[in-house]
Picture (cartoon, rainbow, N blue to C red):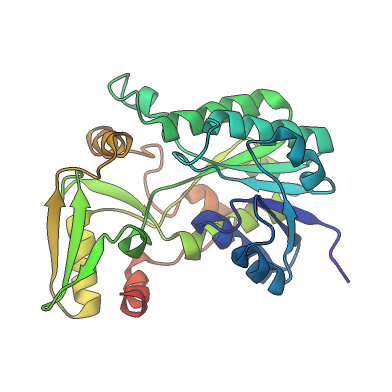
Length: 298
């Protein structure tokens, strides 16, 4: 029997969406609906094989969103920068409006803090931060019940962006712009985002005072890249050499990393995991265990 409680997921085939789907499927409270531009693609077919409903919808086409969301109790939405004609703010606004129109009861938005505000106007071109943050404000006045989640630097970038490269003697960790001994906030997306979002969606109606209109930072540690390299070296049993690079090749990303290293990020969270998630019973995976994944991926 199909569970009538539906969670609609945007970005279902991406790193975040996949993690959220994994968490929801493991929990079993909800049926999962993946909303994608290409429901006929191989990634969509793989989701269908796992029991996920796949429907067509495009954040850049508002008219497509209402039929895609119809019947959904909850929504998880994430937008990606650089690859769209429409701004992330407009895409976020589109899905908020559609969610309101169909009566979604709880909306989880994957956000980031405003780089312009955090840097006191020094860095104003980190659009993927500022536009996501602008959606927060729109959500707050929309009337749609919501919470936001924020993630740090993905540990999965070890292979996604080839930050970690195998060498004859061990590994090189290539870090652009960010100083090696300044703390950074790291997220193990595949392990931690799913349980965090699942906890919000399964408890939003029983613990609204702990969830509604709140922001949750899903991160496993605040450590330096040198500490991360040392952790990898210990776990892998081989040297991991930190190599500093002058640029990522994308000015907004360079500015993001400069902003984070100069001003810090998620400064309101003193210890990780975020105590607000711990209060909801969420247990995040220790970042030290990520070394075991590295062994299988690189």
